[in-house]
Length: 472
Image (cartoon, rainbow, N blue to C red):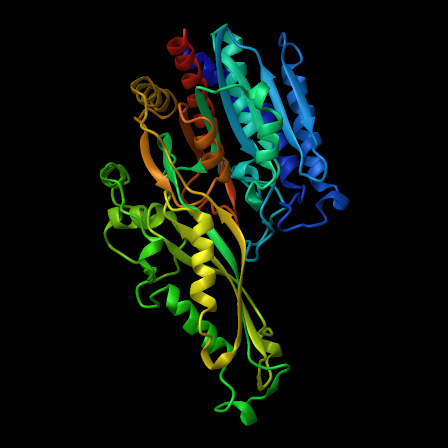
């Protein structure tokens, strides 16, 4: 592949087509089914799918044998499936999703989840980086090869609309498409992150997830706090105590040993290399308030904390009025949404059951306590990279950024990867993405770093070209 020519081609496609398409896409509030149970009636998901499909059909229309199908299994979110024939007898599966997280509060003035703003090389708005760009990037990479007549394997592009809800619809589509997917020798996933915007980052592991709602009820109705306090225990105090069974509130360490695993020595060495590549600036990825610092001064420990160790986040609270509406009432109950990130190799379903048992056992004062498991996602640990792919990743990073690639686990979950790892144990995996420092996926002021998007697209093109040489 002529890297300079490919870069020029990809930059032009991004500037003239991808950015305008993503700008329109950000305006669509196509929230994932977990956050919009009436998604079918609202029609936003269909609008996003139709937009993506229309653009892709226009790009592949002149490619012999290429096809695009929007699949809609009964009662399930749709999937876009694109097939592009190749010159070698092999299959590459390229994956992304187009459903979005909910709005979230705290957006800066002039910004908003459904308000696309292009500023300083960044496209602000929900979903552009996580990961609406994936289909556009995957197709642009393939088209860059077609432009030069460079060989590649048969490419199957799969874009789902349920990832942010745990991909619960996806296994049905993978089974439905089994014959057409075949047995991919390479899987490219564009739904991950990067620790800087200066090189290609390869994700080598993903944490799992066990989440749910913990509810504590002490009264049938709220009562005057002056009368009841000291007699009726606070539902919040009970909730706080139950959470302390799970988490050490002083350190954040997860207490049950069954939720920890032995971190593989290779992943520890990988974390050390990544920390050196980042020059120790791991904590600078996040928008700390003035005077705040991370839980550790050791960047290696921070990387391992966010990639291999279990952690708890309280992502929602219920049962308390807004401060301006809070009277002197001892509230009848409190609920908290718990999100527990799990080590990549820990069984998520078993962990969910352990959480339920831990939190519901022996409720203090006989309070009514329940933990409803609502989310579970299996983590994933990448198989060892084949020598050809390790060399190709560096070649791709040099082409796109002028630096070798770096590798690191990610703290988030991509349920699809665990499923694919089981279905295709012989496949190699290129898991990468554009979610880097301050990009704030799922939060306010989320943005897509345009330069990183272009670089990742060029890197994918290089790896596809090298894969074809290997396959041939």
